[in-house]
Image 1 (cartoon, protein in one colour):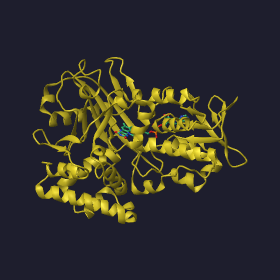
Image 2: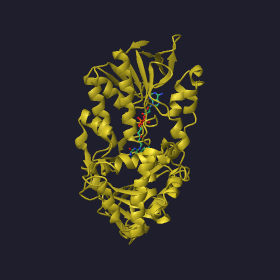
Image 3: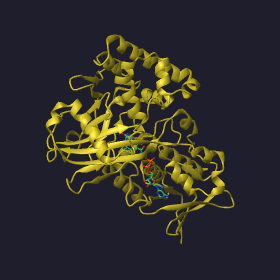
Image 4: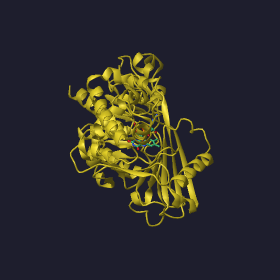
Length: 454
Ligand SMILES: Cc1cc2nc3c(=O)[nH]c(=O)nc-3n(C[C@H](O)[C@H](O)[C@H](O)COP(=O)(O)OP(=O)(O)OC[C@H]3O[C@@H](n4cnc5c(N)ncnc54)[C@H](O)[C@@H]3O)c2cc1C
């Protein structure tokens, strides 16, 4: 059956697809968002664990004050109040059980707030702190005036060029780079790191603050975005798997064929799916085009996340960075989730980003590594027992941000005039994050809006 959707069909119901759908609905356009899975949310979803009744995110997600597009999107759909927005950056970093230092920004205008945080950062000697501040400033200079050079470099190479020593890399640069780029610094693009630093640390004070959801991730945006779109006459449907993007004789997309056989016809199409899924949707003739063949060269990088219920609370902090262990971050759900703290005070989440060497390990092995790291870093955990654990391995968590992949990221507009791309991996100049996904969706909607208006 052919179903007519007037203005646009969006394939994919993650942050990017929903951001596109919301922006199109806001423009007054008729849109259908189709999602193949039974629920919206893509790579940022949550579920309720039947045994504990707790919300479990597929992976702990952290936003930052500089996520302006995401904050706007959540404001529009009316869920911004479900975020905890810290006024300042304040991260406790552990380099062993008795070596703790806090990166705490000062009440000063940016970027002085960040310099003040570094001046007091006790994991580095005074000389190292000064070098980090000078290195950051120099990196901003290179970003501005030597962009071409930066685009060829990895994070490790740029750190070498900036004269950053072993301790500064270990305790400051690499934890930030791995968390924000989800990649080994030997591989990750220096250009993307510079972009993150510019937006987060060399901007307003609020831009560097951590922001996270006080509810399960799906509750943060999925239903609210759906309601926003449907109230404006749009459609949001799950279990609607796109099988093929059909390109007609005119060279434009004529319809999206669903697995059950229905065809969705519209004037415009936005594909908001990951790269490999996009290539599977495109007709053979189209993917020989250089634009699409470059997409085939993009790789992904894994993230491992473990959710552990201990029989007691072992830290008061909401989150803690671990230095020198496989496990990188601990999040204390008691301090983060608004409703569940009292019942399960020992509910913790752990994150290992850029987890290339670990994604094929068994869940038991990974849990053993994480618990060893926890006990090594937080002595109070040595007495605690594990009541329950869930280990989630996202093998294709995000696009691998090496310099070559960054160059091969596609633009929003495709060679097909009424087909546009969205997704965290599309060229936004940001790492593959929620902010990139939301921005890409808004950019694709703007492109459709311009086409409709022309
Ligand atoms: C464990 C983990 C931790 C992360 N941590 C952070 C973090 O701390 N901060 C941060 O900013 N970002 C983080 N990210 C990245 C963030 O989750 C992603 O950038 C974002 O969710 C990507 O959204 P998207 O809409 O671009 O893609 P997706 O979420 O992948 O959405 C694509 C959607 O398209 C659907 N789809 C695919 N093919 C079809 C088809 N043929 N028909 C219909 N539908 C289809 C999929 O089912 C999916 O729902 C993390 C990611 C993971 C996995």
